[in-house]
Length: 340
Image 1 (cartoon, helix red, strand yellow):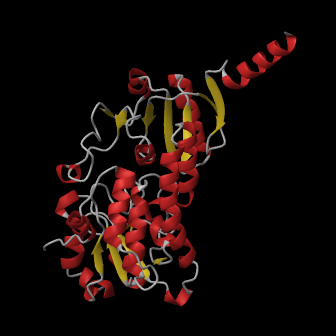
Image 2 (spheres, rainbow, N blue to C red):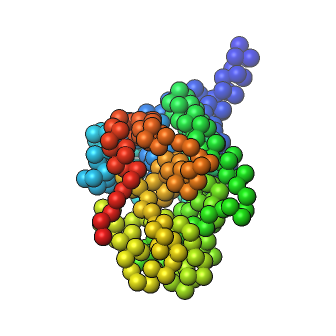
Image 3 (cartoon, helix red, strand yellow):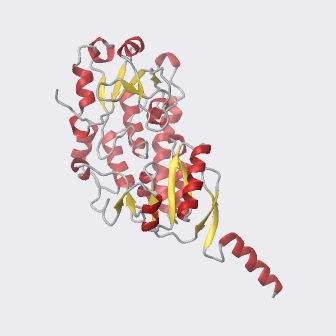
């Protein structure tokens, strides 16, 4: 009888008397979570990770898809969910079983998670917002949410494509690395340098990010000047559009007289990054970057990364967005052709 009592006490300490368990999140924090999780709250940076594995568990959505984007998302993407990325009061009202947060892991982010958990008295679990850590994120989520099979499908996709890209990128000689500029902002003179979470795809695919500016934490978008871009002389310009279907940045870069002095513009090596249903390269820096990385690799080095992009895109949409994309729509998304 005494042995039974001792086991019960130990189990109660480790597992909340059979109702909870202790996990170590990806920020290294020990968090007591329910053994059975039915509902979760997501912040911006982990929303796509969670939606890919367990879309029905989320009680909120954090991106309002445009009408154009809705064509490429399942109809229930926002159904029965509240639009918010969360004040403490909003989270408490939704009473999820657990909260997921993701970011570049550092002491301030860990402190933020601890303070949020204290405020709402709901477990906060940190994930890592890093392209090199998707397999760890997905496997960890699969274990917590009891969605191991779903997680395996997604990690297998990452292994098939991103692992291959990462391996081949290391073999590209320095002298053969393409010089790439990431153009943001209405006139293309905002950018993110190497080492930024917003431009991580350039590093990942083995190209050289020409921007030599400081990294701005958070939203990024460091300022560059036309004089600097002239010195950098990128061979390829990748354009992010902050104005959705209007494609303001692409139109400006390809038509402005000052930009016409850049070799990439002269040689028509300016490419609009696909943006539906979410940006394929960045903003948000979520799992949308997986298909964006494959697209970028194939664009920059087609002789190295030989992907059937229509096939890969359809596979990605089915597995990560739970949407059956037609071949025609895949081609349309892969080749945005802005008119000037």
